[in-house]
Length: 93
Image 1 (tube, helix red, strand yellow):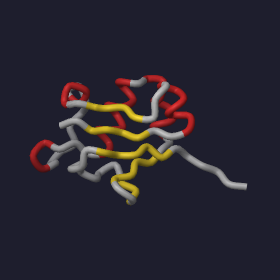
Image 2 (cartoon, rainbow, N blue to C red; image 1 turned 90 degrees about the horizontal axis):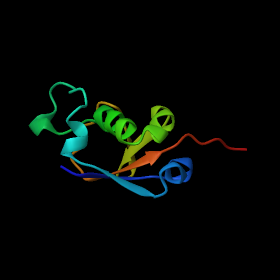
Image 3 (cartoon, helix red, strand yellow; image 1 turned 180 degrees about the vertical axis):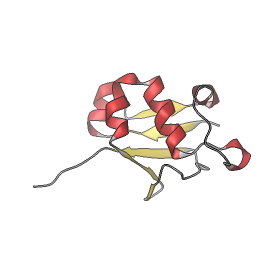
């Protein structure tokens, strides 16, 4: 499975692009989270794989949310879609 992650703001600046991809190979070293149907990754595994592949994003990823479609996803959400968005923390004024 290939998952494409859309990046915004500082995350996009850190890696020099607004989209990155994670493949099965990126998930091979990630801790399995039990019970995902058909071995589909969960958001927690995406978070871990993204941080491992792009260490410059690790801190930001730990404080960010992921969205699947137009909905925020918890770390337990099984990823059955091929596209996610990394939503960094925002503050208003």
